[in-house]
Amino acid sequence: MKSQNVIQLKSYQFALEVIRIAQLLKKGTHFEISSQVLRSGTSIGANVEEAIGAQSRKDFLAKLSISYKEARETHYWLRLIKDSGLLEANTASVMIEKCEEILKIIGSIQKTTKAKME
Image 1 (cartoon, rainbow, N blue to C red):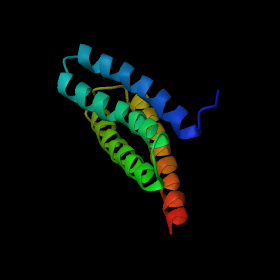
Image 2: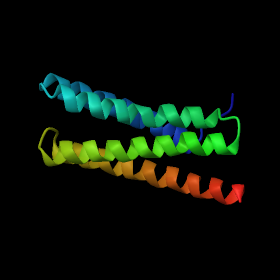
Image 3: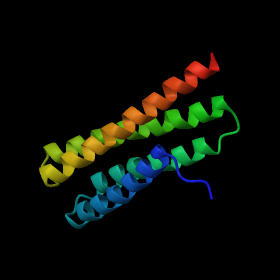
Image 4: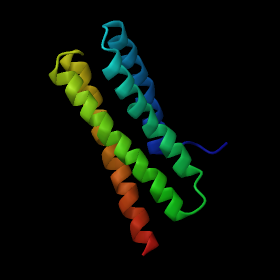
C-alpha cells in the first residue's frame, strides 16, 4: 500500500483534533461555533483526498484550492474561539499553529502545481 503524503496525514490528524474540540464546545452550549469549526476543519482533509484522486492537474488544483479556503475559514474560527475564551488559550494556539502549517503546505503545493502547468 502506498504511504500517505504529508498534507494527507496532517489534514487527517488535524480533523481528528477538530472533532475533539467541537465536542468540547458542543458540551458548553456553543453549538453554532462547534458546528462551523467542525465543518470547515474536517473539510480540509476531505478536499485533500479529492485532490489526490483528481483526474487532471487542473482538477487537482481546483480541489486543493477548496481545501485552502476551508483551512482559511478554520483559521478564522479557531482565532475566534481563542479570543472569546471558549477554549483554553494554549490549546487554541496549538491548533492555530497547526492550521497555519497546513495553510503553508497547501500554498506551497498550489504554487508548485501552477508552475508545472505553465
